Amino acid sequence: MADDGGGWQPPRPCEAYRAEWKLCRSAGHFLHHYYVHGERPACEQWRRDLDSCREWEERRSAEAQRSLCESERGRVQAARKHTLVWTLRQSPPADWHLPLEKDE
Image 1 (tube, rainbow, N blue to C red):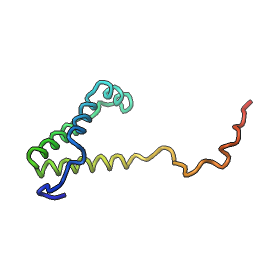
Image 2: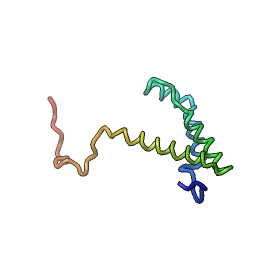
Image 3: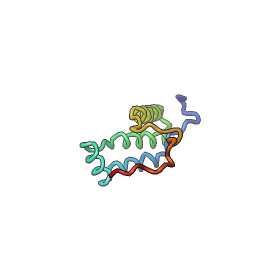
Image 4: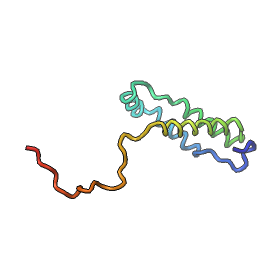
């Protein structure tokens, strides 16, 4: 990460942050998130990221650059801590083509 911002671009376009923030505040997302997690969705980080992205585009602020990098790093780390429920197969079972057993 260069301090002067030479050639650095935000991880996502500012429009992507705006779309995520707008989606997070939508009624459908609110209902889904509340049903699944039992709490209101936290949309503040998307708004902060949008503000930082706009600040970067307008002023090339080092603070905005740092904020966006930390936020994206946190998202990547959060996604990594959730493992898959199913283990993925490399090939189908040997007997996949045989008829299924009938339960009587």
